[in-house]
Amino acid sequence: MELIDGIAVSDKLKNDIAQKVIELKQKGKKIPHLAAVLVGNDGASQTYVNAKVKACEKVGFDSTLLRFSSEISELELLNEIDKLNKDNSIDGYIVQLPLPKHIDEQKITQAISPAKDVDGFHPESLGKLVLNLPGFLPATPAGIVEMLRYYSIPTSGKHCVVIGRSNIVGTPMSLLMSRNATPGNCTVTITHSKTQNLSEITKQADILIVAIGKPEFVTADMVKEGAVVIDVGIHRIEDKSKKSGFRLLGDVKFDEVAPKCSYISPVPGGVGPMTIACLLKNTLLAVNS
Ligand code: NAD
Image (cartoon, helix red, strand yellow):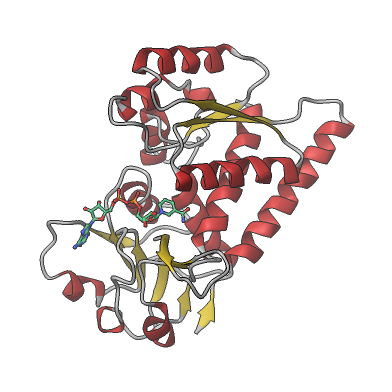
């Protein structure tokens, strides 16, 4: 079993980006500038946004954090989006999800200028992904593709099973794995909450990508010997023995699944750091869009 080290792979990606920023500076060109919009005080969202802003600073990007109260109306937020679309100093921006219930997330996502859509959630970005055209790939699926590439994991002709069909992970992931590309060219099965006999399907997977959002859901009996397992889930579980007061778990029961795998990504230290690195990659791309 080989561990897929998301920290090492993301460090390599971030070092390459930092080098490109140095080159831009030397040529007197514009430094990439990422803005992040955070609505409300959700603890997890604040942690994710802070990590993204910090990562920007580390590679030499400019970054701006825009915070709004959870009371902001949909119209007011749309006005802020409009300002960001028109602001030439900002190359790309993200709106951290989830948003408060009174705001329609689809409306907000679709108001983001496709040229600044570094999260890759806009319909135009998703359309380009489907058509295998260059564009912004959603950061988490893109990060998984980068990990598979880094470890030269064979994908062509393999059976890839994806658990979960969310717009940000499962659905784009299944599309990326079935594209005529490397990594890609898999035969893909996408499973979801209405899927029957899930473990019969997962046991056929050469590559199993798990984005179900349930801690330690995938157990050893659901996995084929020699499979590649990518764990997307992140869960904070209260643990008083830890200084932080919690520990992180994935969607996969790592200790019992890992011995059966040829490769497995851990939580923490797997997909999470790759997501941030791919957001930075998209921001660099946005400078030229
Ligand atoms: P989601 O809740 O939007 O989607 C979960 C999916 O699981 C749904 O499509 C649902 O149909 C499917 N599902 C539910 N029960 C099922 C069952 N019994 N069998 C098969 N499928 C079932 O979640 P999401 O946004 O895709 O995130 C999934 C997990 O990944 C979460 O833990 C989230 O925190 C984590 N995540 C991590 C990163 C990262 O950077 N590491 C990024 C995004 C999400």
